[in-house]
Length: 124
Image 1 (cartoon, rainbow, N blue to C red):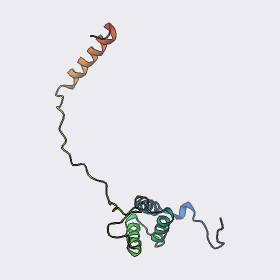
Image 2 (cartoon, rainbow, N blue to C red):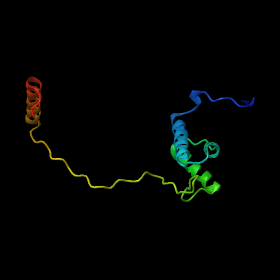
Image 3 (cartoon, helix red, strand yellow):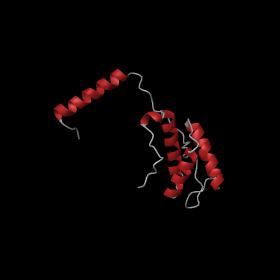
Image 4 (tube, helix red, strand yellow):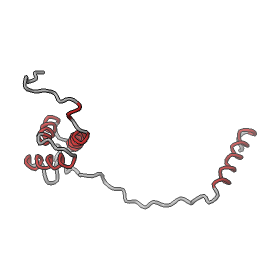
């Protein structure tokens, strides 16, 4: 690897936690787009050149870059399918379990059953 003489690596003190969060958010979003790796990294780098100070600013910059590339709206993936911006929701009905009104009695009877099983062996 050739590094330019003018490039100086930033020290960990130069990068704030908000900037780290912005970088991580952009990289995670790019990873979810299912783009070729080189193109995804290039888009992430272009969006981070604006030096966003928060994840919100980073996502705004990424949206702008994706718009310039023609990947908005619908964000088609490498295989041509549309990519959702959130996972599908499971909206099934949840049936409540009957509540144990006397939990100490239930635990006592469980203890007695376990003790009897260990003492006398399994019932058939």
